[in-house]
Length: 372
Image (tube, rainbow, N blue to C red; front, side, top):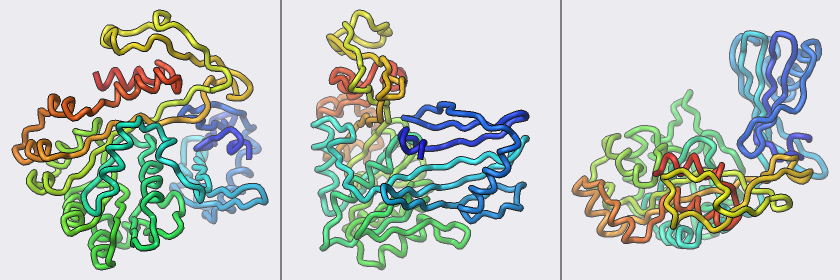
């Protein structure tokens, strides 16, 4: 209950030689909340393992389970993961909120031009839409928000996920089970015999899955998935490295997106400062620096962190005829074409959030340093 109150995504319960530590991950950062005596730790671990239907006698191997909490005020789905360590079993609890409420794409952090470009892609009847970003960058939330937008009574939507994080009413969700041969690629192969309109694949990890996703989009379906790259355009080179033929990519790839999550400044205590008080690196041109920006302060409302919640930074590229031609020719030096099309990088869109007072330079700096 306390973790939910703080808005935590994960709870880490870790044993050491003389004590056990409990940390909450709040807005992407781990914060120690309290400690337990070693004598209290085994009872807590056993209680969690019983509630998540794990084997309490098995302490040598990792285990995974789930706890469903349903009170009069809220519902919570908790994924439980145990890991044997030097001083006992460490447990991580992943708190999955009840997402029956609508995820609004307009509230996730899209700039106006990026949202318009993204919606143009997802509202097409077919094509391949890929979202890139590191683990924990909000890709699943973006995909779920997109599926909720597209979910209509006259559409058959199928997903294959690992794991299924939230239940989406009216959408056919399938849990990946590699131990029995249910892989992303094999699920996709079956989906094509299920009369789909829209398919979501949790992640493209290998050539077989990539080829099946391309095939599905070529046969008149809209396919959404994620992939690990550093930028939106990097998705193209990553798929080529996997072995997907460039001419197939050019014909099927519709929209590529990169995203990162940054902490949102607490509206109650953020402090306005002049841009000259910020220690800007030389890589940030003067014309990009905002006239003023906000810095975190910290108050009771944000538990003295200066931040409350997170917001996504997006880079969105629609594959038009010129870019498709570049893909066919394997000419990936497209900087001029992207600028001509009005595409703004993650770094520039991050600066827009800074200018709007949504976040701070300390949150945008890592994105700027990588992108610039």
